[in-house]
Image (cartoon, rainbow, N blue to C red):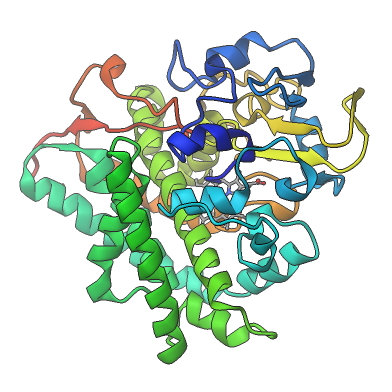
Length: 434
Ligand code: HEM
């Protein structure tokens, strides 16, 4: 997910940055770019639930154990509604969303409960919106997307090939693929896609000047409002029209704008980074890449292993206790912030043998890359389709695919809540028949 209350303070400066409240070494990668940040590694052996000192003095705990994380995420005493349950915050979730959308924060916190930021809601508010959305992620719609994902992937790879034998995989492939897929899913008109993509790219680009991001975010918000109005007037066979049609009582415009914005943010940056970082990890593990080329049937296992091994949502899943709770033998007071250290959780040696090894043939076991419990990723099937098709087409259509720069020069997004690469310069062999 893209939002996390723990990081709100730092987001005032940069909505998707993690520096500020969290100790920096909890997100910085000193050694192997695919291993958990050094500060998390150092904490190994200090317990599956351990105190976490925060810069703002708030009481927080870090969960590094797999079973303990699953327990927290399944227990209703751990709330996702950080407005209601934690006072010690400088920004409210809806304000974070405003910042992400490039707007000045709105005032009253209570307002957010009527809107559609269901990621920060608990039952019963969360349940209603989640159910409505689950009803839109139909098998038929997902099947249709399968075909479109392939077309979009092939189109972009062929454009790269037509332009030469070198490209930056992030803007040329990893970013546009999920962006176009979300357009398809939400029902953005073909003619509006360029505007939608451009605004989104700028508003989510951490390297862009803050004013440009704010401007693009505001334009995106205006775009979403027009988009919702248009869908009300001219419904079609897409997710947003389905939501408008099926919701009883009807969803408000503010809710629909929020829901569309959450889907856009959650479905865009996450998958883009899994594609970019996933390709990087495969290129850096030639034996594993070779196994996948030799046996394309391994792709589903490879996708699950990449999700586990890379765990890109660094510290982005957090909850607040609504009452005193004991977890993993540790007593937590009411109002405690609990941060799931997903990169470590997914390398818990009590759950996997040799967890630090990247192995596309690893027997499947559940991982927490998509979270767990009632907020478990709504778009996980879609993300899997995009990764499976995207990575498959990349390695089959670009013969001899390799990095165009030394691995140490690939710029990492370690300061971001969602880890990945800022760019991935690659090269391949020219081949007429590939
Ligand atoms: C929730 C990860 C792709 C939509 C989550 C959560 C995680 C996650 C960890 C749980 C957050 C929490 O419990 O606080 C990922 C990863 C992805 C991905 C790693 C890519 C590889 C997508 C896509 C979509 C999406 C493609 C969109 C269609 C959502 C939504 C939620 C969510 C709407 C909130 C669900 C709720 O609160 O009930 N995701 N996600 N995600 N994800 Fe994803």
